[in-house]
Length: 196
Image (cartoon, rainbow, N blue to C red; front, side):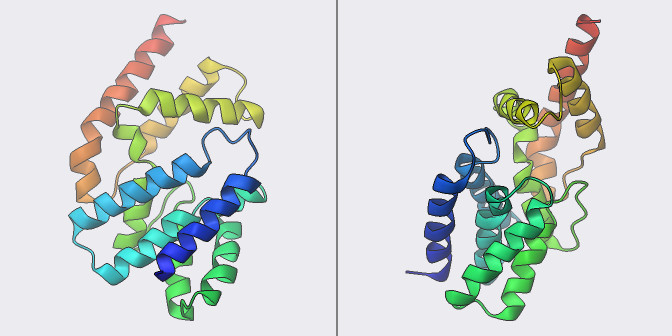
């Protein structure tokens, strides 16, 4: 079994049993979604097999910190990754790259290289997809649980702010997701006007 497969088995099993059920968005389906998007963008951007392995592992671990707490979860994800990846044979240099990829997902996103740009775009791939509103609803429910938003109006205002300031970084995501993302933004603005 490859190192990446061992990493996948380990972290997905842990997350299934350790993530709180009120995490309607930051859960295993989200991790799998980000993994798939990262692979797709990575292929399209022409990264090497070696880079793809590091990217896959970072995608698998990027929200592992939620098993402990939401605040600063990226740093906690790194610590969880470090502990395990050493055991399955990743060297220090590889682990630093993986951790930097994970840390790049912090909002506001400020990626420094192509792999970091890919994970950022993969993490927010849904912004420019047809499942945007379904996914957003899961985030809304999770944010309500954490008392981050009080109602749908506040959530939509937050979404407008977020979508307006967000940019995709890779040519792949700009081409595949930007137009649809703009449609979503327009739709939310309309919803807010209708409910004045």
